[in-house]
Image (cartoon, rainbow, N blue to C red; front, side, top):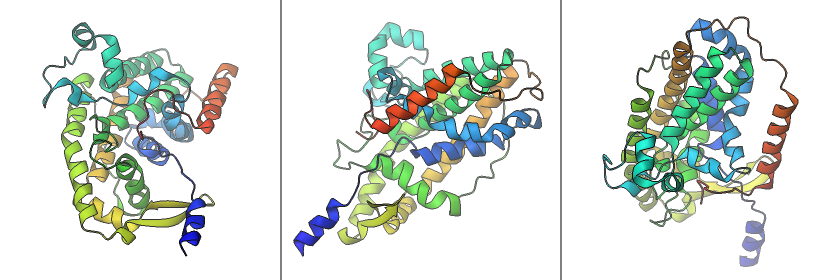
Length: 322
């Protein structure tokens, strides 16, 4: 019988799960479109497929550029204790105090989001449809990552507390099981953000404050479930995969008091509001005559390379699942 179990286990195939999961990044961008005013919806709705599909490009880029990883996280606990007053909120001041190499090593997500906002604002101002859509898709990814508690602490995959795998459990397994059937994404409307820097820092600090709860609740859930109920074998894309069971995921989600759903809703609202803020700051240009022209040859090549490197499966630099 042991031999049979080993043979069965040998059929299992590891599937990498990315930050927020490809599915969830796509869903965050998708739902954000419906929070926009009609003047923006006229462009975003007709290109919702592009915004959804390319929400995952920043994760794919981690297979091409070593510097990309730092754009997705910040190990803010490296800089002391909450509220981390030793870390300047200005990038220039932080570089002067800690050096650019240190910031890159421990993550720069709140500053990178502001860089992407400036790029998106410029694209709106110049009415460059391709860049509007590209930067909209990508800033959505980084904003969503900033809302993940384990992106805001050094114990990002439970590696220091014997909880390896918790990263994907929180941000991929739980939403993939419950988001489509049980969660509510009727959120309201995007709003103008007068101070985007302060806004995203507040969201990141919320994530950092929630990191201990993410870890504690998993320990509690683990203590209240039998080992034979913790995992299940499920078919995924034609392959047999060992997953956390639905029962265990539901128990963990209940102990989290629906934290994952709340953070996803906040991500959707923030993404739409950053899009709206960029458009307002650009002077609210008319978008009704813009169309998503065919991609240039250079852009087609870029996306082809991203997909090829992603399929190879080797992350260059920081990997949220390590």
